[in-house]
Length: 220
Image 1 (cartoon, rainbow, N blue to C red):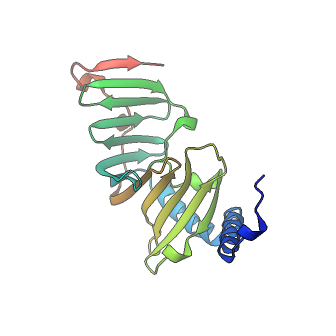
Image 2: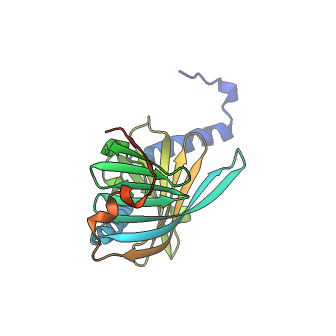
Image 3: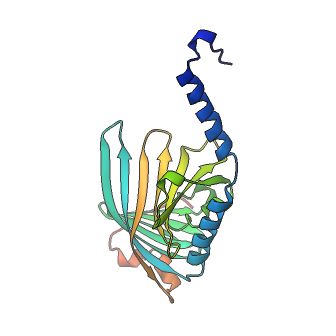
C-alpha cells in the first residue's frame, strides 16, 4: 500500500491520479463504437476464402534507439498460413508447423499448439473477440481511419496493448502495433492485399523434396 503525504499531493499530482483512474476505468469497459468497427473489419476478412498480403514489419524501441524494418508476405486460408520474412518461412497446416531457415537450409517441425500462436496477419482479424477490452482512440481517429486499442485481460502476457488502424471506407486493416512491456514496439503495415478465390492446401505443407540437402529437426 502506498501512502501519500498530504503536503506532497499537489494539484498536478491530483490531476495525474485522476487521469490514471479514468484511463483504468475506460479500459475496463467494452466500447460499443469500437466493437462496431472491429466487427465490420472482421466480417469483411472472414468472407474471403483465402488471401495473400505483403507487409512491412517494423521493430522500434525509442529508449534503445532501435528502429529496424523488414518486408514480409503471408498467405492465409482459414487456420492455415505461410509466413515469409527475411529468409525465414513459417508454414502451418493447422496441425503441424514447419520453420525453415534458408541461410542454413534447416527446417524444424513441431506439432501446432494454438495457445502458442504469435499475433500476426492470420489471427489478428478475430483476436479481439476473446480475452480483450477495446476502445476507440478518439484523438487518433480521423475522417479516413479509425484507431482502436485492444488491452488483454491476461496481465501476464509480455505485451500490454495492440493498436489497430482501420480505414473508415471499406473497413480495411491498414496496420496494427503491438506494445511490448520491454519497450519494444512491433508494427505490421499491410502494403498489398490480394484475395485468392482458389488456393491448394499444398501451399501450407513444407516440401522437403524441393529443398535439396535440407536438415530436418523433428520435435513431434
